Length: 324
Image (cartoon, rainbow, N blue to C red; front, side, top):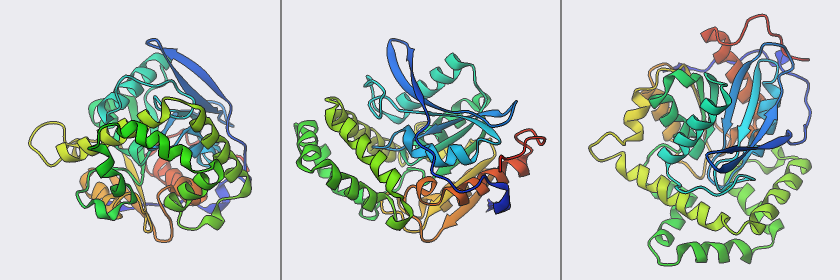
C-alpha cells in the first residue's frame, strides 16, 4: 500500500454542475438495466463502469464521471431493483457481480476502469478478483467490505428488522412514512459529512430520485433483500471457505485506488485502510472531513486521485488531455 498521488488541480475541467447524464434501457437475459452514458471529450478514451451503493443510483456518479471524461468514456449502471432498473431475482453480492459480468460481456466494453462505492465496492472487488480480464484499474470509494462491529454504522439499526417476518412490508411502510423532502435530508445527513458541499441542483435531483423510489412497488423488497445479502457476505467472510470478500480482495491484481471518508457513518472508517493493506497493488486516499460518498462531496479530489492512478500505472492514452 502507498499513498495516492493527486494530479494538479489545473488539469481538471472548470468547476460546473452538469445535469445527470442521459440514460437508456438495456435488455439483457430478459431484464432491463438502466445505463447512463458520460461520453468522453476526446477520441479513443478508455471505457469506465461506475457502480453505486445500497439505496443509490447511477446519478451518484454525475460529477466524477464528468470530471474524468477527458480520459474515460463512462457508463454508470443502476443495479437490479435500484434507480430505473427492473427488479432482479437475487440480491446478493455474487449475483450483482455476475450481472455486471454479463453486462460487460454483452456490451463488449471490457476491460474497463471499474469504480464502486459502498455496496458497489464489495461487488466490484468480487468482479475484479474473479474476472481480472475485465478490469484495467479499480477505484473503491468507502467500500462496504466486511466489519463485525455494526455499532460503527447507522445501518446497524436495521439489523433487527432482517430477522422479523414481514420485514419488506415494514420497510415499505417506513419508506413512505416520511415526505420525500424529509427523506432526502435524512439520507444526505447519513451519507454526507458537510451538507454545504451539496448544491441545490443535486438536492433537487435527489428529491426526484426519492419520488421514483416511492412509486416503485419493488423498491422496499430490493433494499431489504440487498441489505440482507450484504450482511450475509460479511458473516461468510469470517468463516472458512471461498466466499470471503477479504480473501477475494487479496487476489485482486488490478492497480487499485481506495478512497475513505474520515467521517463515514455507514461503513467503519477502518475498512478503507484495511482494504488498501489487503489489495496488493493499492493506493490510499483518506479524506478526514468527508462522509460515505466522497464522489459527491469532494468529486474534484477524487478525480485528481483517479487521474494520479491512471498516470502512475500508464493507463489511459498519454496523448489524451483533459478538457479545460
